[in-house]
Length: 300
Image (cartoon, rainbow, N blue to C red):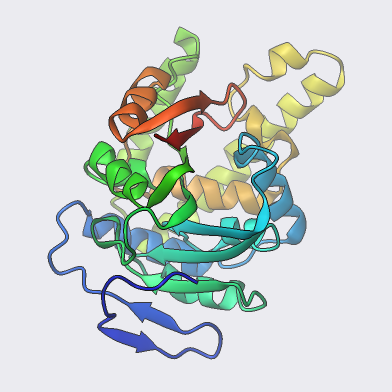
């Protein structure tokens, strides 16, 4: 456990993990509508199977140095959501501090109840309640592209990393490694996202569930079939091929994340490297494996 650098304004006692809440009144780099949307999303998708956790965990943490894992390591999860990444890491490190500005902290409190080496705080990236140079690893997966100034948010995260420690990030890619046809299909889907993201939460969830069932699932299974008949290189170029071996629950979650979120930004590999270098990172590695792009850097 890392000492707080400021006092919480309150402690919310749940039947699971207590939640320590910090003031966000002066936060500027935050989109409140998006925060509310994610709170609603994670209260719905508030559990994942062990199999799902292990599978998606391997996809994102594959570029972390193999010798990193140790009971002495202190880790910060920025934008923890339900706590699925913390669940993956809990038995691999010493202690994990989880922060999130949304109502997702209540889902995380329940989902992470079995872990004694995790603490949950309600705080945003502008007011991370820990001293700089405190953590061996800070990660933020699928979060910073939903913040108005992604580059500034990354700087805030890296400040909390110890010198020689690591920052791991996943940001939506700008399809910079995709063909023209794929990009056109994405632009078409973005028209739907612009409409769906503004719908009332209940209707939004229904529409996104239908998208998961009618689009994600069939395309994912077709790509899986193409791979099984020996055409792996072709299958990997197909839309939604990433979900070929994923559960329908993950598809539903990601469909809501993709189409239901008001603020979404996308970045090329080059842009991500530039932001990481600006944040004070070196030895940057951007994975060439899906999900695109997840990257890691070491604090200089």
